[in-house]
Length: 219
Image 1 (cartoon, rainbow, N blue to C red):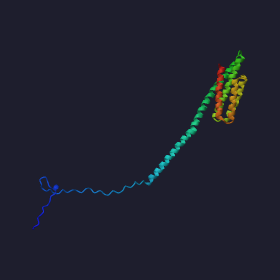
Image 2 (cartoon, helix red, strand yellow):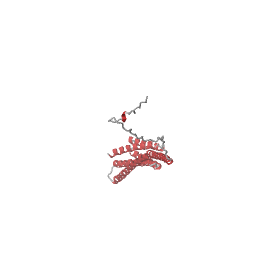
Image 3 (tube, helix red, strand yellow):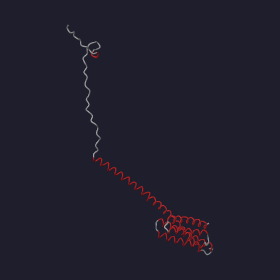
Image 4 (cartoon, rainbow, N blue to C red):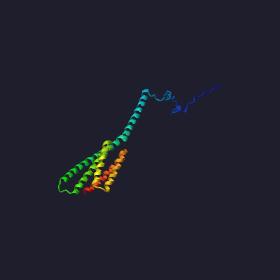
């Protein structure tokens, strides 16, 4: 028997709408990507690493410098500013006391020149002048202690003691004068022992007591 010829079988997608065979569609091959190499960390040049180190040291040095400035301000500048304010206040008190002393001395001279002045008013004027002299001595002492002028402070304390004794001779046995002398003695002892803060505190209280006594005498 003769072999029967097999007719070629057409694939469905090669048959057109009219049942006729269509030529095969050639497809273009996709793009070929080269193999991707594993990424390597960037290499930092030597000069950049050195620059970073120098920058770090500069930041550290600037930080230490700023810290030093802060410590210097809190340890030295602020205390000196306070001492300066105290010195200015004491200087103002000293100038005011000197003006009052000059006016009181002039008043004393005027009263002594008057023939009809009584012994009582003359004694009051002398007492007023003596009290103002004590105030002046204490103001000089406080200003000298603030400026660390120890010789001046010692001399002013001695003068304050003498002038206060003069006040005591004009007002013998008075409790207020005895209290003033006791406080001045405490301030002198603290100064000799170099307890300057205690000395300033005692002198400040003494100034307040003297002001009260002067105001009482003026009235």
